Image 1: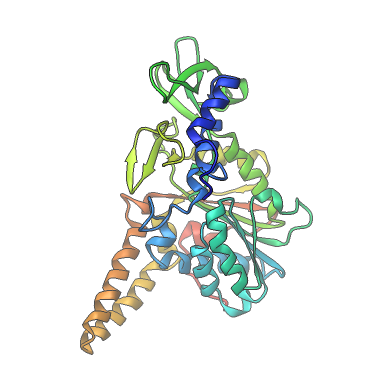
Image 2 (image 1 turned 90 degrees about the vertical axis):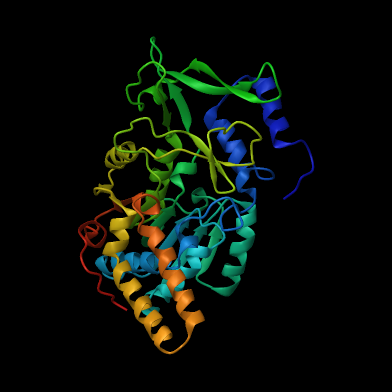
Length: 380
């Protein structure tokens, strides 16, 4: 990462000095995605990073997601060419596992597009591109052709929507106002200040009592639209942290660093993640408005059970028993650890509570596998 030039905090301060308080979305864009000093300029995911996501917790996630993609491909009657687009591909961990888990018949006719804007992560993906000719990398979805020239396929986004820059609103007795980022009068830091809210933001906000806050994400709606254009015919599959169904505010805005949650998201921009639970209801409504097929969301625990995580664990359990019976204690311990890691994927108090959304682009069959628990039958 290039550390020359002014700090990110100094750069943001200069922008505010020139143009006045900035929207929280603008602050978040700089803090997370500044090319040189933004939080995602360096890969933060992994045991040595700030947090871990499902593909890093257990290889079972990639194996089972490959089953999901294969099932959708089969339901579309094996279209060729076929594309898997992974938005927010990180360092390629999920891509590697997913591609290795596809049946040969499917893998040979599948193009894999890794979409990643982080410079550090793109360096890691370049090694995957060099290894596998069917993999290519783009920086953003807009680098892909628009509607009409794209093959059938599936777009996947795991823990991406909650990191798209959002706006913050607060209720007052006179109606909602927008919270913007300004310079602190008593220190070198930043503070939130109230400003008139744009009508396009308040139109999509829930009713707010005085003092109640919410987040509004036009970027998430725009991503949904652009994702649909990137898939000629097929499916969008999103897995993400969602606000509780009883909480219309979008959940509390918070930071994340060194595997710890923090309420402070303004200090030292670029040093921590910034996130809030996605508004599932708003996404479902927008998907309907733009003509996508919309199905009820489910949680990750249910989705992975439908995809066969029980059978996956059963296979490992048999291998563990065989290792124990054969006197291979170290091997049995490794398998036991792998089974415990996979259980985290379905933990209802953690990753298992994440929301899985599936949308259909064009005329495609209902994805019964995801939604009704139909047993998976591999076509490979």
